[in-house]
Image 1 (cartoon, rainbow, N blue to C red):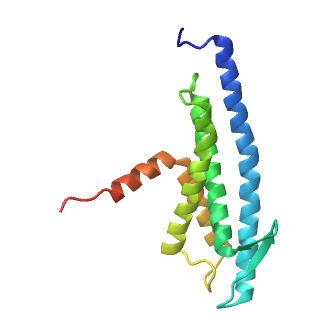
Image 2: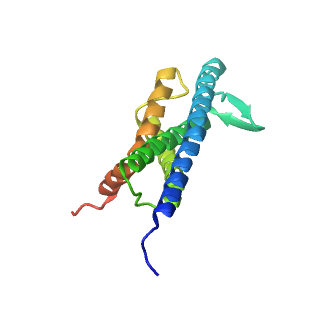
Image 3: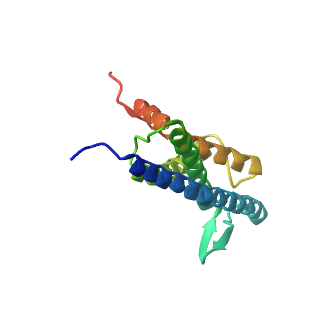
Length: 168
């Protein structure tokens, strides 16, 4: 049995991967827009609620707080960044070297990584939900999540270097 792929089969695989990329983009962008809008509404609601109170919105019968909405927006931004990266990679190569499952799973990994990076930035650099809350801060978090998704491999390599034990 030969390991070569017939030309007709190669075209079929490329069409499948292209279809996956388009479907992911069609899902990811509205998800980012909706989650960003939710985060902005919750920023305003939290400002009105005042200190020591937590504002929330019900989405599909689930109460979403501002911090939860930031995780969602980070995941959406990470997914968008990953879809951009994998689409660029696919477009550059005449024969994709990745399995179709990679194209399905990568945005999920990036969504998780985007959420984690948003938490890191939010706890260290920005203060969401208190007197300094602003829509600009939410935009910085979205950008952080998207960049984490866009550069997932580089981000993970940097984390590995940072977490590697240093000789004493």
